[in-house]
Length: 110
Length: 114
Image (cartoon, rainbow over all chains, first blue to last red; front, side, top):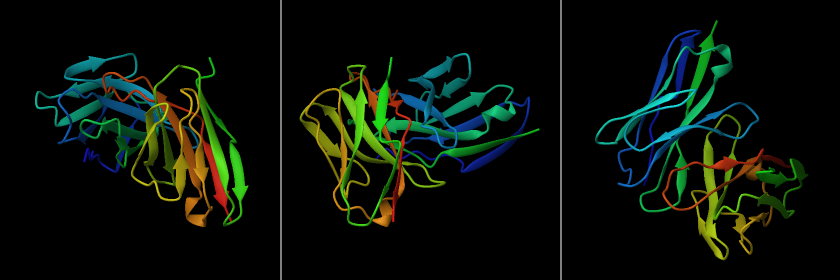
C-alpha cells in the first residue's frame, strides 16, 4: 500500500521557514509526489509536485532525496494565511489509487 | 472554465433514503474519483475511474455505488443512507498518463444523514 506518513501538527511564527516532511517508502519508480493545501470548508488545492531532487515554484519548494522514500515541503516566510492542513499524495504502486495521508495541521502564530 | 462541478452543495437525508451526488468536469479528464472527509479528518478514497465504463474501489467503498457512462460525469450513489455517511464529499479529476497526482477538486458536497 502507498502509505504516507507526516507529522500530525506543527506550529510556526510568521516570517519563519517551515519544512514538512512526508515519508512514502513504497513509491513506484515512475510516480510523482504531490503536495496539497486545504483550508476549512474547502477542497484541497495543489501546491507543488516533483519527481526527484528539487522543485521550486512561486509558493513553495519541494526537496526529494535520491532514494525518493521521503519528500520535504518547504514554505518560505510563512504568514498567518498559511495556516492550513498540508497533505502529501502518492499513488498506490502501479495504480491510479491516490491515497491521502493524515496531513499536517500547520498553525502560524503572530 | 467551470472545472469540476459538484451538485448539490448541501443535502440533508433521513436514514434509509437514497440519493445521488453529481460530479461533472469539462477538462476532458479520463480520471475521476470521489473522496469523503469527516470533520477534522483527512480525505478517504471511495471510488475512482480511469475512463468511461471503468471503475474501481478505493479505501471505503461500502454503501456507495458509482458508474461512468461518459468522460464528463461520475455520479456517486448512496444506496441507503446511514448517519455514518454524514461527511463532506469531494470529487476530483485528472488527466491520465504519468501518475503525477495533480488532482482538480470540486468545492464539495456537504451531506447530513439524520
